[in-house]
Length: 49
Ligand SMILES: [Zn+2]
Image 1 (cartoon, protein in one colour):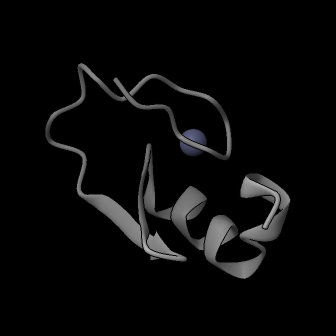
Image 2: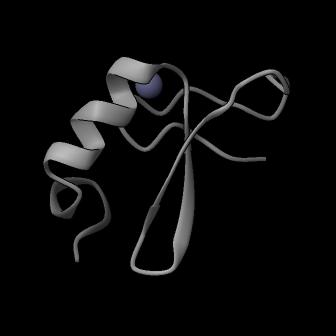
């Protein structure tokens, strides 16, 4: 199970989701391309790093 770090949507049942990015060696999945972009614009706001 994994959640979209931006909005908290559960992604475990959303196997088609391919909105993925990497940040400091970690892979993150998102509910949408929009939230992936938000994360990439300010990853520190979501992972505290
Ligand atoms: Zn989201």
